[in-house]
Image (cartoon, rainbow, N blue to C red; front, side):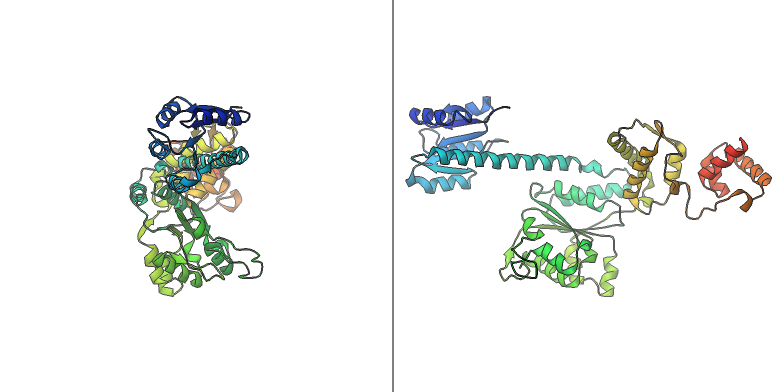
Length: 446
């Protein structure tokens, strides 16, 4: 495994060599006699940490740090300084230095500080990597489709993302409200800040208040220690309040105050806390109707609805279905190790006819189920869930319970001739499920 490389920057040759030897057992070391030489070394080598003197002729430590801050990526910096210059070292930390050590240098303390600095840098890099991976999953194209209604949402989400405005997202369950939230956050000025999500319907009233605003030790039975709430955890980032329509009235009051003043108190606390958090909320309820009924505060509604985004149900943008099906098909064939590259016309016709009460989430689950059940390299009518072959207003025919067998056979033959063999249309005309039609065809050898 590659060892960590530390660049030692000091105009005193003896100091450079002494530190290099002291650290050689645990790290690879390189040296530079001034700030300019350090920048040249950094250009040509992979440096993990810089240990630099604060005062050097030519380019001093502060000037070196300012140049490092201009680079897209830079290793953490620890400064070496005399006791009389601690104030300058603190100034350097405000500019981005990780820490400082004073002369004479205690090597054991220095090694502990280096270890701590490298561990912190590793966590920081892992955090950035994870956020990048998450963002890759929620680009603009994550809202799949070309329908006018969806394009309007994409444009609005991108527009509002460049601000820190409060956003209310409305839409039925499963339409993709959380996806819109992800797009807004990961393209916003606070994209590198925390992204905290809370489902307001998942907690009882007292617990939700503690989850959101935190609590002090002894605030209630079981509060054995103070705890930060989601507002504090989201400081500098975004807080997503899902199912906002389920928020109890007592907590609506505290949320309204936060939106007005950016302040709150923990449960059982008296200290007023202030954080900088962007609020995005979502609901599948009609908040306007709830305001009329008195179950949701009107003033809070208007505070939440600085920008409103309405996500349409899938049944209102069926032109997006082929793209969605293709996307989910690729996703789940990869996940389950299948080789499926086609959906039959019959299945696609059924998908377009279905109402999709569960919206995108239901479609996604349907395609995954179909991929799992498929026996070959094509999704056909035998692969899809049975509910997809029956519409709510379909009438099922069962031989003796429906038409007499001979009349039934003749009727089916005539309808198939009329539709030129289009079984989906034939089933629709006959008022039976497609699978039932297939069974009848097989039964009479048509």
